[in-house]
Length: 227
Image (cartoon, rainbow, N blue to C red):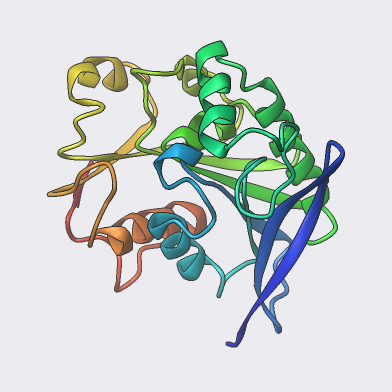
């Protein structure tokens, strides 16, 4: 199946967020995938290696919507006079992510012109943003290496839809809170011999996502993962 890759602009604030929509011309799925990238100061954009791998895996099955946070790439910034680093450092210092979460809600709302319901996927910081989205059209949540040392993920215990947590065996951001992750009671899978960035393990992550969302194992399902 030929996959179309279309640039889109999603209205946001006084401007728009840069986005891309990947879809097959012959697709009939009414479900879609929205992927939230990592923190902008840690390679967080729609070209991220893990984001791209998941998108390539899911696009043959249903539309995939990627987007950049405000101030990243071609996305609008409320403080255009500030470099990206200073703007996002200010958000970090104030824990001021309410507007970023609201932006995701706008992305979800915009996506209904392409599909009626969505599977949210967040990688690292993106998993925190995805967890806090509010929309009746959300079907599931996949949180890839959620940074629990920096953000509160207790909502994972009470979300009203299926959730999967994908961990990296050697993730130095999570080693000290393993007990906390286990107590969340969520469906968890661990990619062995991997770190927070999943270099050369992107396909293993993608296989887990595909298995979770489509509900079936495939020949390329992760053989380097454990429950």
